Amino acid sequence: MAVKDLQLPPLLHSRSLAKPRFLEQLECLLKRELEVLDNTQDSKVQELRLQVYQEVFGHLIEEFKTYKPILSAIKKEYDITLAHLRDQIRDLLPLRPKLVLVSEQCDKKILEMRVQEREEVRALKQECRHLQSVIESMRSQQSALQIQVDHLKEDLATQYQLYRDERDARKLLITRISTMQSTQDAEHDDNNEEDESEDPVVVKMALQVCREDLTKAQIELNRLQAEYSDVVPRRDWDNLNHLHEETLMKLETLQTDFNQVKSEYDTLLEVHQKSAPTTQQHGSDSQHIATTPRPNWEQCSDILGGTERCKELFEGQSSQKRLEILMKEINSQNQFFTGLGTSSDVPIYLRYEGKLKNLKLKKADVIKVIKEIWRNKMADNEKNDDPRDLQTFLHSYLVEQYKDKAGEWAYSLMESVQNNLKDDLICLFNDVLTGKVDESIYHGQTQLLSHLLKVLIQSDITQCGSLTVSEFSEALRKAFPLKSDQDIEELLAAAQTELESSGVRISYQTLYTEDTDGQHKEFLSLVKKQATAERLQYISELRAQLEGKGEVDAEQLWVAFKTIDPSLEPENLEWNLSVAFQTKESELQAQALEKEVVLQRLSVAHVKRAGPKG
Image (cartoon, rainbow, N blue to C red; front, top):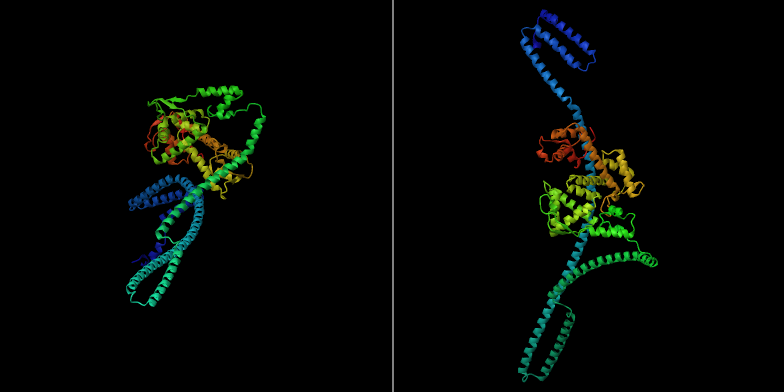
């Protein structure tokens, strides 16, 4: 039976409406305490309200002795659960700002990826439209060619049918002539037998008829010979057609070669015509000049070890003195090198014995060879999981390229490198080869310039090869978000100075051209110079973070990197540690090294800041 169906007596019902005194006391206590808490501004008011209810519940448990054990157990379980939940809340509260930060970073990355994908999709759509236009043009060409092929097939079929008809007619004519000849011979034999018995008049008439038939046959034969005198057999026609096609192909090849030679001849003729007045002027001037012509001493820079050393030796000297200096330098240069031997203390690329010829490489040749070496070295690194060092690769490259003359090239290359160390590319190659700096420095510079060019191309919406000053400045900030405004202004000024332009547009493609020696110009040199300064500043901050430590292990270096550069990705951080401790990323152990050794190794590697300071 349900509770609402119970019929209580009127007396008991009236008594049930009256509250017990103890209940009224508890309610008054609860109401009074809650009113006090409602008037307070404490942030923990909810916990205080719960405490009031706990006290009231405790009084209730103390009053009911019979139910005290079970109620105490219930209260204890609730208290334990509330304490556990408070501990969890206390542990999760510090994670809230981190969660917000991670969420913002993820949203930012998603937006950047969307922007990048939008650019890529736009580029792919443009390429797709271009390819579709190419396909349409090729289809139209294919249709035109198919129409020509169909016409040629029809002409060929018609011509073939004509030849077959002529062949059949000729065979039929020959058959008829043979038949007529045999008939005439038979009739002639019969006439000879019946001459005595036949009438002379009949014989005369028959002879006349035969003569008329002979005349007609002779006329028909002459007509056929006249009409078919130019007809050739099918086999001869096929052979002549094949020979004609081969002759046409040879003619086209010769015509192409002729056009190329003619264009080269026209170019040389134009150059000759342009230089002829100058040559005549020089000739006339030389006839009037009685003094000795001045030699161009700058052409001796390759022999004297570069332009700078050439200027140092020739500055303030007379022509006679300069000639003596040049002869002295030429005589001092060895025509042959003496190999250093094959011992283990000799670099592997110099392990040769005997006399090796000095090739006397010029600076331009050295730069060309070094660029080719780096290009092949990067390809070799992509193929091998464990790339070889530059010394081992250089030895393999020289042996593969120059075979028996690898020793001559190795010694000649090293001598030219030592004579041109003021050149940035040659000096970096020498530093990597001798172990002064890590190979990642060169790859880092290449990636840096490639990344900048990619951003500039993406910013060039019109694809005209140039940007306005504001667009160029914004592209620099996008490519180098960590650079200061002063560095951006220096790069902008260097670009304008190099292009000798103060206009509203900057041709960024021209900034990537090289000089006559194959070197980058002022703008890209400044980009690399700033990158070097930023790398050294980064190492200085790391040194300050490790201040007071004599030795450093992997964990301490990890903490130091994360302190000065919180945005550093784990894979980049592991690579930095592998460089510092000269081991693979998967083999890092709790080994400790001297702080200066660690900082020295990091300072000569491509270690860079990933984000703003923490």
